[in-house]
Length: 494
Image (cartoon, rainbow, N blue to C red):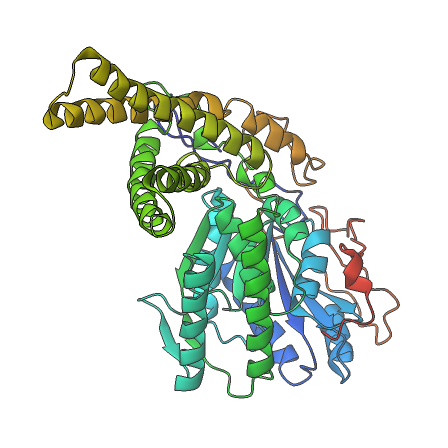
């Protein structure tokens, strides 16, 4: 429900809409590969914890990644014995593939996953999903590197984890603290738009999802966790690290070239404060001025270096012209990205052409002022020339900023939200039970389940969606289909 009442306050996002009585609010996916030993104690412990502490309807989905041991039969037995447990098998390996497939087909408004070893203490689960239910955040992650986290693991894994975090911060400018902790959650409406942009199907899936979400301005909530290392983990550290580094290179290159359509994620969810018309609040002018001044200072240093370089093999006029031209192109590109927040290659050539026109206007202003001074009196004093040049350059700088803001990079904030919303137009969520604009009803409490008899030979991979309020099973099974073409590529080794 809405939490803001004054038109002068920043708006809050919508609280999670109410669901049908039998629809789970939370769907916890446990991806497994050859986990016949740990699967049953993990699922039973997780189910007991959720039954005892989680106040809403939930579901536990076992995502079997092409296991070759008895894991499928263990999962089928758990599905038959526990009504809130469902089982789905994929014929190809890949944790990312399993998560994307199950999450894309789930109707639960909150989607989570955790590793089967349950290294993360389950008491962090409710704090993990609470900000997603309230609408405060879009994604949530458990962090082993937060200052208040309590972690027990060997020095080798500690070094690898922190080194990987430093690589992400240095190469992709990531601000989240722990990309690989197997304890994450995301809102379903966010996942519908975010998951199609994530290409990785293995262990780098988490990192890629978080980097794209952060670059798009989505809110990521971090929860400090208590975490105990599993000494029997089957993760191949060297191969996983190699694949992760390849993923870092691929995502970094895509972000640099602007090939990722991050505008789809910027404002599709709820009421964004940037879209609200608030009085007496400047629309980024102060930030743009600071950015323009910083870029100008760096451009001046760059110009001086270029001039010194060109001066070694050319005259002062040619060196000055070349240095001014190159620095003007770099200045326009930097202002385009840093000052006015324009990303991608769309319109880059036009912006550079307009930037050169603006540069020419400024050059004509300064040169004209100096020519007018010389025409006004023979042999003006050097101090007078400097004063005229300073005043002319100051006027040229102000004019350049105004032309950049009004002509080269105009503010199209009035049209951006409608464009993004049009790009994100999914069908209405199945859990909405009230008319648009009406207050949402409270979230459904967990119904008392009816246990089904055990079938040792299940004939379907359909996933139960929960139990209806009248005690009968509602026909809301979801059929899981590959959501990306390469998910069915038999040549993928993962």
